[in-house]
Image (cartoon, rainbow, N blue to C red; front, side, top):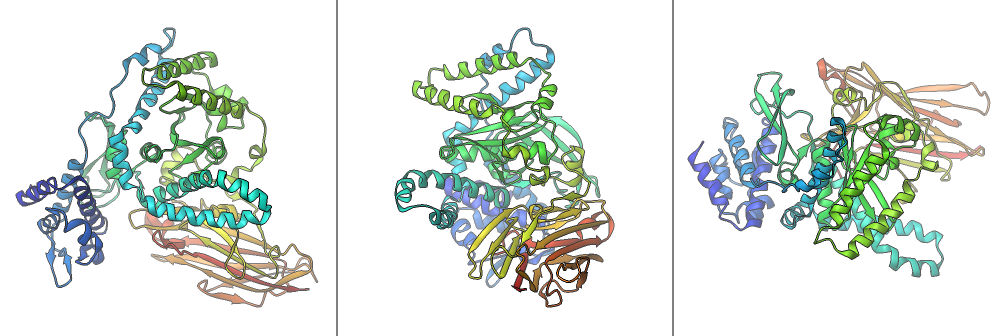
Length: 637
């Protein structure tokens, strides 16, 4: 190890905590950017007037020294890492900073008295199940650590999220006030605005967490040559913050790469990567840090997520940080095709069996709940709750509040067929996080063609129709001529007629790009959008299309639009190929009452051919993303 580098890292420790944290995070960012893009010149240069240098590295003793120690040299207006500089020093600095920022203490002290609550008559299978509930029930107390919450608070861009929340709240009020009387506005505004803002802030926090903070990892990149790795084995860990260590082997050079699976959220605040366990762990911590009543949800069929109590709604809200999905509890059963059995919620207050919030197939679930009797599970949960709420530091007022809230929830969990039970499976969509092979192995995606049959009524808004889709936000919106948003639909697939070839939204966190592509191993993929003129007094005059695409290695993306006419000949149709989607306009479809827009992806080379044809490719940093724009003019018949 380079002695100068060790000395500079030791100097960093002499700074005040905030200064040291800022400098370490800046240095980690520099290292990660270069190691992820070793041949990209822009990541090897850091301008001297960059705020990262002026506000984070220069004020810290040892900050700039670390850059020089790993090979950076000073030019006229920037610090630059020469192409010939060894990357081993960057990896060494990265390892040193990760070790210095991670505590070595055990995350929580286990309360062994809880284990005595396991029924003496339990079988080995039942004991294992009850032990898993106890483990989660104890682990959530880690979220209550004040020092940990203080660290978590420093990573949340609270001001930025508050600004985004106020913007969203203003748009919401603009739409709502049109349908309220003045007296209603005066009474409801004061009592609801604060609670509305809390729920909306949660939406902004969720979106930020998914796209700007945390990274999904199926398998880490090779630390030697940056090639893909595949998991080879697993080993137990001596670190109490970590349940196990996965060993991945590079498919190119054979290097073994360790991937620790942390259950303690503290190191994850720095590492910011993992799979659903790490995601739910950190997101639940952030919610508790911000004062939300949040709990960790454990699905016995192997998934975890978060629930947050909404004061405004007076109910628990389902939140899946991996998917950026909020309040869509049937997603797992209907979208992912999961065969649920036990879904258990754990918070600092209580354990709750919340399975019935996540299913509308009560009969099927009951057949799969065969670990123990319902009465035995209920008695065990009650014993855990009584133990926790009878502790010396648990207040009587809090116990009353939790009991009242639980009664409200139990009424909600009584299965009564409702509207959401009849939503089609396609409304929920398949799982988006994780590689195609990983999702397919878990049975959480379907390889069959998917028919949504959504139709856009272009005559609903007068004689002009303006549709935009953002692949970054994964949202459609319809606007009027002045740009005012009239309607939004979340999820690219929910605005389509049908799609095939396992089309999905791919997010490349290392390159910070996102796009739609076909699934691996699929030769061809298609997406179709359907537009109809429902008003019998109107028909189409002009059609205008703009879309962003990108192809690599002889891949191909073709577009065409099919028009159907019902005025002279009901069977008449015209199909026009679209050679340039960057700015396509046509008058040849005049008189049409239905349009079907089709995008087809194919070609490419090698095992990665599936991602060489990318529809709507955009940078995740693009805040004003308009990946797809469709403008349609109508006229009277």
